[in-house]
Structures are given as C-alpha cells and as structure tokens.
Image 1: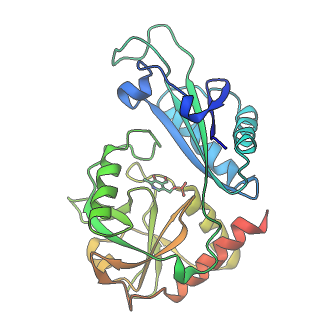
Image 2: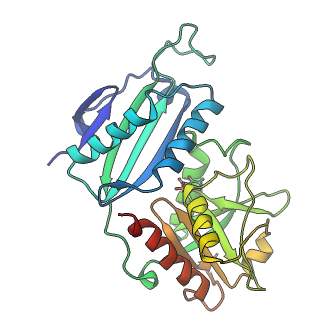
Length: 286
Ligand SMILES: Cc1ncc(COP(=O)(O)O)c(C=O)c1O
C-alpha cells in the first residue's frame, strides 16, 4: 500500500506529493515542525506536542494553519488512511509560497501544512535491548533552539558525526562553558557520580522536550527526586548512568560516551526504573 500524505488540504499519494519550489520552508527553512508518537491509534502527549507547536509558531509569528481540534482530526485521518496505529506522525508548517525575499511576504499567504505518517517498530519490550551510545560534540546551533524550527542543518551534521563514529546520538555542549545541553534530536539526562538524577534547565538553548516534561510529571507522581541543574562535560563523563528521551526514543539508555562505558556500561537501576515508568505512561492510557 502506498503511503498517504496530507498536503495543504488534500490527502494524496506521498510519492506524488509536491511542494512549490518557492515555499519558504524549502527556500529559507522558514517553518516549524512536530513529531508525535502514535500508540494504538492514540496521539501520545497530544496536548504537550500541539501546545508546543502553537508556541513555536507564535515565536516566529506564524498563525496556526487551522484550529487545534481540526489539526488533530487531520493527524488521525492521515494515520487512518495509512492504516497505521503505531508509528510517528510528522507535521510541518511553513510560511507558505511567495516570491523569494528574506522578509515576510508583503501580502500574507496561507501557511503550508504537510503531514506524513510512518510505521515504527513495536514499543521496545526490554530496556536491555534498547540501549545506544553517544558522542559529545560542541553545539553549533543558533541561539533560539527552544523553537522547533525546520532549520536542522547543525543537528543533521551532529547526527551524521555520531553515525560515522558508530554511535546513536550526539550530545551537544556549550563550547564556551562546557555545560551539556541536549542531544541532536533528544533531551539528555544523567545520574551523576553522587547518584542524583539531573537534566539541564530550560532556556533558549534547548528544546523543551515533551517527553522530558511527561517524564517529569511521572517522576513527580511517583515521588522520585530529580534536579533541573546544569552539568558539565566532565560530570557527564563521570556519570553513573545516562539516557536520552524523545517522542520516539522514549527512555533510551546511553551505555557508552565517546567509546567509554558509562558507569559499568550496562543499563543502570535508575534508567531501568524510568524506562518502566515511561512505558506505563505510554501504554497506560491506551
Ligand atoms: C533538539 C531536540 N531536543 C529534544 C527533543 C525531544 O523532544 P520530544 O521529547 O518532544 O520528542 C527533540 C525531538 O525532536 C529535539 O529535536
């Protein structure tokens, strides 16, 4: 069965789908995206993701292409037409089509909306089979990465560097201070040398991860302590445990950093517990 995409008001065969070459997303990366995990036909952390989409759009002064409730129906319909109940839904909104000019179009044009759906493997059954490895790299992105823009060139270069090093993810740090920020496409957490669960505080230099936020809500409910406190590359190298979170990584242990084992190189007890906690979060409401 061929994949179906939603493109500006129409559902069409994805391989036939086209966007105008003067779309500002194509020309300038002038747009916003979101990725939502679909589990048994349900949009996991829907409010968090659609709320962040609205915020990102506001920050770049772009209107929602349609009200949230209508968008939700488009996402579910796109999944239905692809006969996918477990996968990821990608949505992208750009500033639309206009003659190429850096400044916004003089006469507003409608934002362009594209939605695609992709099947993903079933939810991992076992955390020990869900491990990955990471490398540390200086962060070369712009200063507003809290906005989920489609400008992802530095993220792509970092992911490629990770792949070439045989690793899963690149963890980015501020070269000036040595403070660790986040992964190329994931939030990053450690259990430090003293056993404290930590992740970096939110500001303009990391994306406010929806999985990060959902995990924090679960931690709160379970009475598990954590700190939103910055940590350095050195603290990361000395960490007992490290893991990434994202809509499609869930809680994913990082068992090696730059080729060296994190702790004893196996999934640690805290990561193991949080993997189970987040699994309940995803599956619990299904
Ligand atoms: C840079 C970056 N940080 C963190 C995340 C994790 O965000 P979420 O948990 O909402 O998937 C992503 C996800 O794409 C990302 O691109």
